[in-house]
Amino acid sequence: MSARMSPARTIAAHAALITYTLIALFPVFVIVINSFKSRKAIFADPLALPVPGNFDLIGYQTVMKQGDFFAYFQNSMIVTVASLFFVLLFGAMAAFALSEYRFRGNTLMGLYLALGIMIPIRLGTVAILQMMVASGLVNTLTALILVYTAQGLPLAVFILSEFMRNVSDDLKNAGRIDGLSEYAIFFTLVLPLVRPAMATVAVFTMIPIWNDLWFPLILAPAEEVKTITLGSQVFIGQFVTNWNAVLAALSLAIVPVLVMYLIFSRQLIRGITAGAVK
Amino acid sequence: MGEVTIRELKKFYGGVQVIHGLDLDIADGEFVVLVGPSGCGKSTLLRMIAGLEEVSSGDIRIGERRVNNLPPSERDIAMVFQNYALYPHKTVAANMGFALKMRGMDKAEINSRVVRAAEILGLTPYLERYPRALSGGQRQRVAMGRAIVRDPQVFLFDEPLSNLDAKLRVQMRTEIRELHLRLKTTTVYVTHDQIEAMTMADKIVVMQGGRIEQVGAPLELYDRPVNTFVASFIGSPSMNMVAGKVVEQGGVRMVEAGGAMLPLPNRASVEVGREVTYGIRPEALTAGGLGLSGTVAVVEPTGSETHVVLRVNGQDIVGMFRDRVAFRPGDALTFAPDPEMVHLFDRTTGVRLA
Figure 1 (spheres, rainbow over the protein chains, first blue to last red):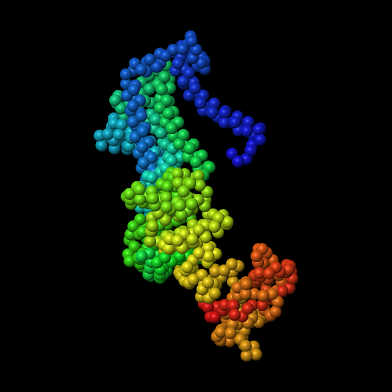
Figure 2 (cartoon, chains in turn purple, brown; figure 1 turned 180 degrees about the vertical axis):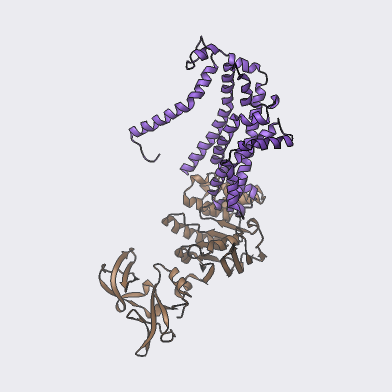
């Protein structure tokens, strides 16, 4: 904050930010409050806060009774964490190679790896399904992890290679002179320095994976490999929807992703301020 | 020991040749400065000695060993970088000891070396700090400490002072020089600053376009530059160069330049009619007498001396005077060259004639 802002501008800026926050959080807020209300109360007054009288944990009870719910959670967690790990690992490695080494076709390779940002992976669903059937991976978490890793890599490579270009060459060379291997330079010098970028990529990668319904539905719809988003769908029927249960399931599904976001955003902020003060 | 021998060294990037067959001998314990304008290949040469750039052809020897194909860590060198290149997440002590740790040296030995280097560099109070908590000068000292603890055969410096402010730079210059006198380790130092080169070097290597223009002791280069490039690169303000032609007048050879008759040194033996570049350093000019006449354009007092820019036939000639002079812009003035301090170069090749 170098320039001091006039009070009017400060107020205007905050007003805009607060408005945006309210709009963004409103649906989440509605989901969470209604998950604590009885079915009747949800329909009578969707915006009312849960108070004694309309307070009801029936939604959570239904979800908990549905015995597989924790398994769904576990599946989502395994898929998200594993995909995230592979996206960050392979993305960072590819980005390091692209930014650090001069080789023939470097630029072309970079463009090729970034192409996936522009082409939605869902266009290839049929082919992916055929591949998974052929390799016997249908109804496994491995199938989802593979697809999500592929889905997350282009953006990860793109963002991380830009950041890695900014890591001082001298630092890497100092490492080489000190006898570090290329792997050691990557893991001990470069990765810690691009941690804020890694956190950004992690957040951008994690949320679509956690929330995805498409690939779980197509590649892994079996009971024992259902993810939480897919699992919640059992409460949505063609004619009757158990809103209490759906809202409760969604509220619960927010928690892990929120925790992970908080972890990464701490890294993000720490990285930003560390760079700023220098 | 720590002598460096370079033979027929060439470097290509793709089809572009950036180093054109260099030969250079660096004696054990010598402080050699590579100097030249940006893009002259001096940093590339240093990085090739360090092993950070591959050698396209030719030989580099450190001591008895041919090091062309050795990785940097096995060349027994230490390098100090322009932006210090300290490991940001390690303390000063860990930064300095890291290379030794990588070699698997005994902890107690590492510690004693780090402590000793810290004493030499005045870093003892900062050993447990992180680089971000240090000033620029201190970081530079840590970078030097990291080099010292390795006790290498050769120190390589890549423009180590260019990120420091002017005052600190002068101070660190002296410190590095003192350090060298104390440790007597062979040093190769790259800079684009000719003053750094002049003040620090035992031997200066002036480079341009991937070639060595001249190698010699600082004053040798200053007093007898082999061509116009070295002449204009070494010295500040730089040497005045006037295009002229050798003529004979009353049995005396002189250089005629834009109507002015300029004296030649007695030793000069150049044939009449030769097209030459007449070079004269600013401090070899005196005000008044016969020589280059024009009007004063700018007067720049530096305190200890005064630079006077004289516009002669549209060309700026700089004179430097130790005593306070009272010229003002617009004054008509003549600069007379001291004939014994004249440098004469061939006009087309730029090679020194006398």
